[in-house]
Length: 178
Picture (cartoon, rainbow, N blue to C red):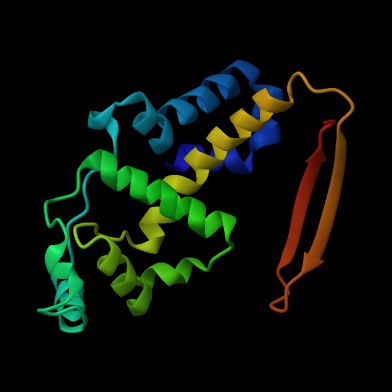
């Protein structure tokens, strides 16, 4: 994992000084990204199934106890492929909707996810985002590069602002002809 973090933070140095190594590293990151493994059907290489936290299970049972709709859900264990698919959908939700990562540790969010899929165990935020952020980012950058490779007359615009917490935020927009 440390290598992928280095890949993302030192992108221009690696690309310039070691183009063959950079290309191999990017290809390896794309090939080993959970979304790529899921699409290719390589279930053996997917992340391991997480163990359920019994404390949270007891708390959810107190909210969603006997007589609730949860009695009718499938309680079979979730497969590696299903867990990875849900993880990627959850990751996309957090990134695309700009949700706070601390939401993963929120009791009410955990109860909500449990109500939707009682057999799915939410990951911890520290493990979840370190696992997916770089690998899925590399996959998206490769898809974007492939998409833009044959385009001409692109317009690149930059927008920047600061949050109330003094965080600097920059967005890059690429406009393609219709």
